[in-house]
Image (cartoon, rainbow, N blue to C red; front, side):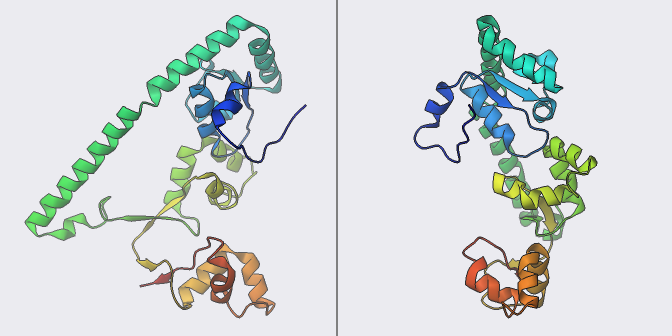
Length: 253
């Protein structure tokens, strides 16, 4: 009786309101936090694995959702929530309290307004002094790019934001966090950020050596096609197909 939905038409509220339990048994994967947060906000009692709960820093002591640390515990969570109205109602209320406390729109706006105000004032003060060198290698000038290859800061940041992926890398499921990002995370809205001190042309009008090198690394199937003579170069693939597919071919300015 499992139905796989590739997409949901209409108001997603109807989908949540027509189901009794939300189950997130993930052992790894990025993006599930958004769906769990949605389930909380709609008041759907949620059963989740320890990996999913870790993304929220939740433990069984918080009594938010039901956390199964083994297949048997997951099964018992589902049976208890579905079978006992008191547990179902208590779980629902605890989730709503949690999401209202941790996901306040006004609080998020206040934090970002403070970040912007502090940095704008810093920039204005430095420009007034006339010494723009003070801004070098700081957050106000450092450019963060979605990576096209692994980097130490990207691995560290991705592991912090996605502890389930970090565990999967330790277990050998993924080669590194970059591998997960490139094959899964970027399609789920995740970010893998590397410091970038060079400026690139994001939509070049002709090929370049650095573009050929990076494109071949990021898209090895294109590299194979070039070697087989199907395309003249990586730029040839990008110009004909890659650009429309959302691929990146970057040349230095």
